[in-house]
Length: 96
Image (cartoon, rainbow, N blue to C red; front, side, top):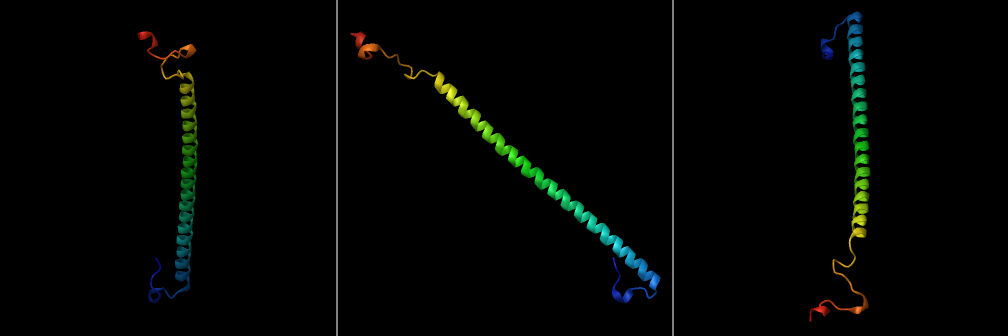
């Protein structure tokens, strides 16, 4: 941290050292900020990728559910479990 202006050294060499230290600190802070920004961008990309995968898997699950439902409906008897007799015979006709 730079001392207040009234506390700065008067000699040129001390000022140069102080300036070099300040530059090094600024460069280090900029590097850390760039690294943090890159990490944030990677995290955002990972989230986006995960969201896309989730959406894809949801669609795949829904498609499989529809296919399974269609298979089940195609294998069920269409009469709802009641045998249909030819010739228009009504249920209960043979009971008396």
